[in-house]
Structures are given as structure tokens and as C-alpha cells.
Image 1 (cartoon, rainbow, N blue to C red):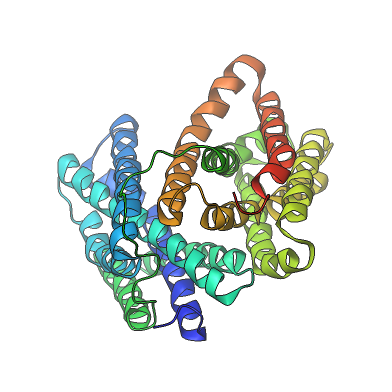
Image 2: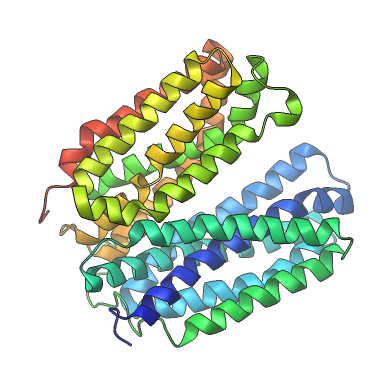
Length: 378
């Protein structure tokens, strides 16, 4: 099937949706796993690292396999694997069994994530217009839907195993819809299966890591920042990240239209400066309303940075697009994993507000690099 068809665009959106849905569906199950295995927080933290380990390993391998066989089989394998493994996460009876299941689950997430981005590059190129922000918005929507669906089922006393079966069945149905609509061999190519990232790809990967690092830091530390400064009570600590997530999703839904009008460079500059302004507002806010406005600005400003970086990975000339996308995804995901620890390290020495100020400084690097990453034919 041609990459430039409404059906292929729909299938690509659905692949992003399933990736977000599957990842978020695991979150509400964590307390059940802790209770079932009767493990301490340290052991649970190690188990959660297994998911990240599986994701990173699969991301590295997916770039190689997609370069040879195309993204379609990887998307299908990754998506259907999520549906098969999700129920096992609530029946694994030992820490070792759960760790193995999380490695497999993380590998499935990493595979479909990278392959969906590689497919998105091909579909966008065929359409000859920006589509990447809309694709990434579907990941955010899928994340919200997955978390909401699993939480509602659990709150309704459906049972953890039955809840996973329902969610897995839904994901499987969506994957069936994508099967015949995905491009047959998007990005498949001959040649070397491994190329060391260099030049523009390294810069794109670093900027992606910064953006993902900031997202992970806001997820894990925003509530504590708000509570420690006395801006909100503990029960409302998660409001900042919720507003950040909503504004990021809204920004991505309209991001393709913005990029079409003003171009990638201006979108990067304006978006990153808006995020920096959001950090400044958040840190200087004397009360909760202005702090929440800061989170809205950060989410809206950062919303289209990663989609543009992925698009540029698909148009650069120094290495195969599939391998470049895999490299950027892997490094970006590493930033997401390292981000909370990085912020915690800085907060230990200089305080949490100073750590968030450093995030704003890092975001300025995106502004300064906008011209370099948007020069054509590199």
C-alpha cells in the first residue's frame, strides 16, 4: 500500500495510539504488583528498570531490522506482543517472573515506538506536508485513554486480570485495523545495517534527550516543587503535570498546521522560548494560578519540539533515516530515564527551584540549535 493515502495515515496514528495506550495501561497496575509480590520499594524500583532496559535494547535492534525489512512487521509484532504480555504482568508470581515480563513488555513498547516513528517519517515524506506532530499527539491521547480505561476498570472492581484482558482485547482490535493499512515496506532498504551516528544526527539526539529529560523531570518532580513552595496542598500536587500534559497534547494537535505556516525553524525557536518563559513564570510565581500558567506554557512550547526533531532525522542525508530515528529515540528515552535522577542530584546540592532553572537553561540549547538542525540537505 502506498504511503500517501488516508488509510496509511490512519494506521500510523493508530500505531502511536496503541503504543501510548499500552504504556499507560501498566501504570495503574504497579500497586497491585507490589502487593502481590510483597516486595519493598527498592525491589520494585529495580523491576521498573527492567521495563526501561527492554525498551532501550529493542530500540537499538528495531532500527537495524526496520532498515532491512521495513517498519510494518515491527509495528505489528510490537503491538500484538503488548496485547499478549499485558495480562502476564498481573499474574507473574515472583519478582524474577515479573522482571522477565517487564523486559518483554518494554521491548514491545520500544519496538512499536521506533517503528511507528520510522513509518511516520515515510508517510510524512509521501504526503509532502507536516504530519509528525499529529502522530505524536495520538501517543499522548492513547496514554490518557490507557490510564483512564485501566483505572476505571479497577475502580469498578472488575479485577486486575480481567481488566488487562479487556484492555488487551481493545489493543488487539486496533492492531487488526492497522494490519492491511500500513505501508508494505516503509523505509526498507539495502546496505549497511549499522552506521555510527555523527554530525547532525548526534545534535538531534542530544536535543531529543534534553526535551525528554525535561518531560520526565516534570512528571516526577513538579508535584514536589509545588508542594514544597506552598503553592498547593499535597492532594493537588499532580495538577501541574496534568496541565502540562493537556497543553502538550493540544499543541501537538495543532502543531502540523503551525509548522506548515511558519516552518520548522521558527516553530523550534518560538516553542523553546515559550517553554523557557513557562519555567520563568513557574519559578517566579507567588501563587498557584501563575504557576499553573507556567506549566501550560511549558507544555505548549515543548509540544512540537520532538516531532520536528524526528522529522529532521528523516530528512538528513548523513545516515539512513531508519537508523537515525532509532538513535534519536534511544538517546531520547535515555534522557527520560536519567532526567529524574539528574534533577534529584542538582536539587540535593542547590535546591529544587535551582534544578528547574537548569532545565530552562538546557531548553535554551534547543533555541540556539534551531538553525543548525533545520538547514536543508544535510
